[in-house]
Image (cartoon, rainbow, N blue to C red; front, side):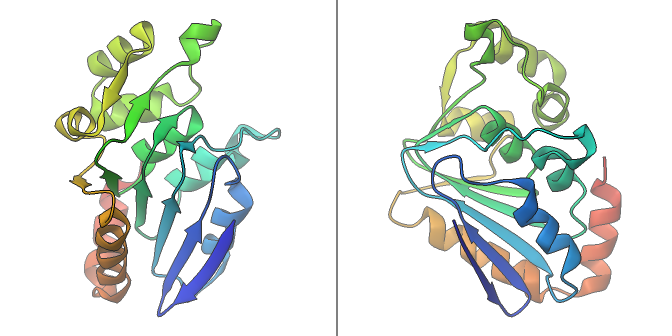
Length: 183
């Protein structure tokens, strides 16, 4: 995992399942962070499931971020990684990215179901959960899970441009939007 800072932007690059709540807590504790970009290059994005209290989980911390969270993903997005995409204020996926709520294949109900349902609607979330159907980036965009689908060679650049713009945006407007979007 790599963490960089750039003009109010915290850029976290996470391969595989190395992402955890500690990194996002850092964003909460740093006064000069005005936006967070999580990039997940690689074949699979499935965030680490952490032991501890539910309020300290990666998804709980992500959903409480007081600044915009932009996510750039490619490959297969499953498990808590999918829940994290549902938490993002803006999500950009590379063409060819696949998504899946696959916990039911192992007889488990996803702990991020409510977050997913809030993002895409309860009926769609239930259908995807019950069937464990893998779906494409264009379908994820149609459902409202991701906001942009871009070619693999530029999805990360598009997400970075969005995150930079959010980091430079007038704080009054961003703060009002963040207050409105709070769970």
